[in-house]
Length: 472
Image (cartoon, rainbow, N blue to C red; front, side, top):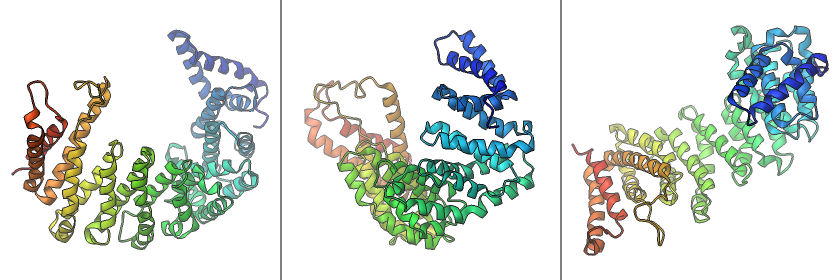
């Protein structure tokens, strides 16, 4: 297989590159159609095995061609595995490992596809029993190629989980899942811990977070939370390079604790760590770092969703979490993160309006009361800048305007949730007070065709209409 860049490969090489060039050129529709048809037929052919390796080995191949070759190879391994003689599988494995080393420094999309190829080979190459040790021995000892090993560790669980698309007997797939995932879980945890501790830079790499996330369902969650990796995840939230991946990891951990009775000790270990993030809500808002703010909001909202029944049971103990979600709503001046909290407020309302959680409802009346004020504030249409048009608040961006209109209806649903918790009369009274305040402050200045600060009048009126539907 390593000698694929021979006669068959070279013969198929040039037409493939030509077809790819046609697809990305300004050629007419007919030519592109012919090129597309050729590439589809090529991907199904047995010659594709050798041609893809030829492209991947050829220095003159473009990144686009290399990615096409790696993607084609993945499809061959998944769908056309039967075309290969069993005695060629070891050679295919060794060739893939060598290619991963070659592409250690990128391009990353090609490296990822090659890791997926190796994972799908591992699933079907039943005689290959020492999969993880072989990959670590080949790719994990050299700092230049260790990311390839991590890439393989990252994609393996997902590819095994998706294994039903592979033509493998059910019993073989079950056994292979056990061999590749269950029997490797402890070793993977150790490997990731060792890598995280190898350098400060390693601990902040997104690929490390991706690996942890993908193995959360395979490694006992309590083991992850009790391991040094938990500190690594929390630390990764401090780095711009790993922040998004760390948010994904943390939210994946929360999702795995939804069975709160089974995971109560794990939740008790996670809750203090979560509380340490609370100051970042204010910090990100004051720095106007809205991407970080959005990530932090998601972390608190998803923790709240996962533990909502626990919040209803132990309202006092988890009040700080609810207040943190409320603070996220309050400080979201750009209204970019707000929607991530809506489901949490709905889920919490569903529990605390039940008779058995009446005590929690009383505990959170003030929170939902403040939420009404916050939502009405966010309902306001934007105020034009000096000299801006009063009739074109979105500067001609109709999509943004339509999105905001839809967003207001979602906020209206949150206001209805508030009505169920604190009572519709209390909520409508808040809107009425705001209307009354506007009339006293700006009413005398209103003229035909000109209403000063109309946004501050329209928002409570809109909220009244939304909440009025809750009146019995």
